[in-house]
Length: 304
Image 1 (cartoon, rainbow, N blue to C red):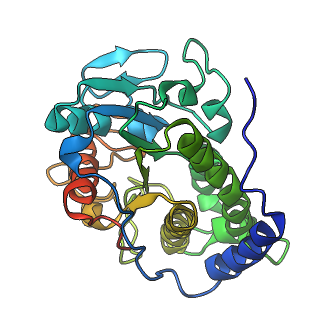
Image 2 (cartoon, helix red, strand yellow):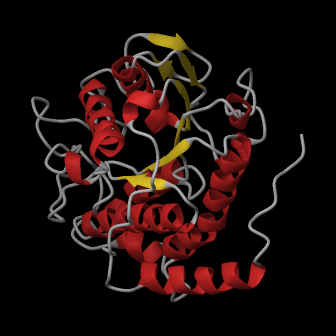
């Protein structure tokens, strides 16, 4: 398969990359909301393709319809498709997917972009978490917590060079996300394209909940800010590449993995409900479906 090129404006890309890195590394974690793309309403999106990683696929949430990709029929794309009454629905999201899997197969799951064509009315994309090494970040922060339980050993681990490694990695992921969006536009020039952000995993106020979530006290705000930086990058890339950003962080604040099982939408490292560790449970997928629906019907969902 031919690999798509970018916009053909490398100088602009370089300038944007410098601006993005400066923005992510600074104190301003909230930027102005993007103006919704002029597109047909939700009722016109009869042919829907969903691309993404495990936050999209819904691992372990009943009913699993693709074990290889840990895909549930109660993930947010399935809920949105049902509400849309989509005539054609292709969910190719797959646990562990990176931006490369938009073009490369993942086991039996073919290149995800193959689900997008000129007839597509709506395409949702949620990707980037695995590109920055989300799983290894959680494992590393849990591992080093014992070194300084009241401090921030994980932040120090990723900042040994004097520059925060995760901020740099997020900035370097931006052109990968942009390339995916341009590939979607090329395949489906009339489709409404939504780039879906990631939900709130940890307390928004920076408090911790060790030992149930085994991070050092000072690393809870560090990891919260890392999640915000990832979402900020996605929102800016969406704005620069003719896509609409869907905020799933704001709607999930207060339902993070530190909250009680009764109100929790993100499961901790030892889940109490069917879901992967540090991933949305069924209620979390419902919340993300609600955020997508708000964007589709009211142009909201691109806040934080």
